[in-house]
Image 1 (spheres, rainbow, N blue to C red):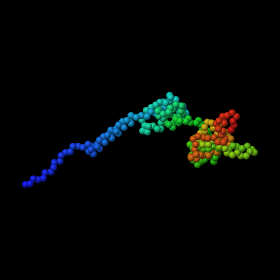
Image 2: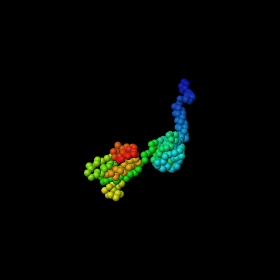
Image 3: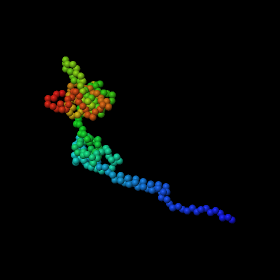
Length: 237
């Protein structure tokens, strides 16, 4: 019988370093090592921020004894708080209460000291102020029409103060005169005399300032002398 054909023998090949499965495995191992190293490194990262060493009332001027540096771990590095590595807070004034150990937020200690203000209640006759919405927290312009004496022509209204914040609104039922309402204005100290004088001089009108015309601080009108003029000897309103 003729010999049957014999198939060639298949020999095992040595493993190759370019094998796809081996490369993928090595990449996965390296990736897990890198990710683990980053997690461990980030877990030990702290941000140094300022905190209050004791209770602080609004209007407090900060000293070194009021501040303590603390380590805190933030997700966003604490952008809303003062970093202890930044500019010193000594000499700045707080505008919000701070408790002992509380982190000091940027909003509680502005870079510029807030202007000193007083709350002045201004009675306003009916229909001489807006009633189409809540004025609290809004800005208004304050006008006065000075009382004219007998034989004198009626004077034109004068602007007392522009862009004054309204701290509160007084309802008619809470006033002795049912025909009046009123507003409580947050007036800078240097203009309080002018506002009180305007109330005593004649009738008051309150005009709401549109939201796109608000200002950072009140400004005096023709009725109100500038603080420098008011403080000068012999100055009159």
